Length: 420
Image (cartoon, rainbow, N blue to C red; front, top):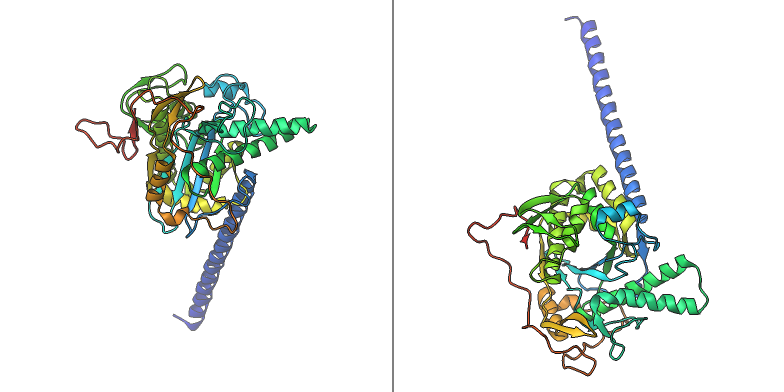
């Protein structure tokens, strides 16, 4: 081969190398730009989720531990207090927008240890009879000692705040709704904090439509039933076994209590099963690594979710990827029995027993507040009866059953819990 031909070939090879290198550098630059753009979009969407100052100045957990209160409102209204569209209400099988009020029918404390060990989720039955924080609004059941069903703390405080603002001449409906809800959140969080004896670092509030939209955003949520169910009140109509529920079905699943042996206590297990199925779906569907799916999920949250203003949701999304691997243990807090208070069914609870159980489960180090000057938790109410306390339990004491053991011929949930 002549020197000229070798020289020409060398130039061609050099040009190809330069072209390849240019394409590589350009590709890297585009990737960085895309990543930066995606991060900007994530941040923009996350910042669009409604935020609350209900936790401003509140005590925090120590040693990197985080306690998150999940509140599900049984409300047929959006974040502005406007009724949900009729077509949405029809899908929800939830009746008129005037039903439901602002009861916190779902209350779950999620404890995420700072050392990366197993997370724990504690479901609080909505009818637990406890000391209510935040004042006593119109229609309070027990004005003598400030006790009522734990679910009512939100609605009672909201009504009281709106009444006070109205007396002061405030007529702006949006302002009444906004400030009323902030009072409701503060009262509900304080009530749970005092009842459990631990700080609440963050919270997420979800309205009734949230279960519907979340399930649809995930492309369905897997659940498992031990036996077939049919309930005209909630719209639940499911066969036995593992199945994937769309938005409408998911809402019916978590709302059903009629036809279940333990009523509301069994519904609490349904809520746990929904969360377990949703976290498994998050992981298996690659939601945390798929920008399109993640954007859809965050965008969905803008419609139905309110969080505390200090919560870095993007950082938590990364942490939630680990939580979705099944490293969450669910527990329903025990009750002592059932009673009646002013014509309503209630759960009788032992406040001190609950506090001891929580301390044993998440460790005493996490129950120590780190905010200087933060007020101590209110003392627990005495379990001894008083003239305005509920009557004696009408059924034997009841506590959360132990985790079910696999039985021969039992339905396999494929990694998710099977419930009644």
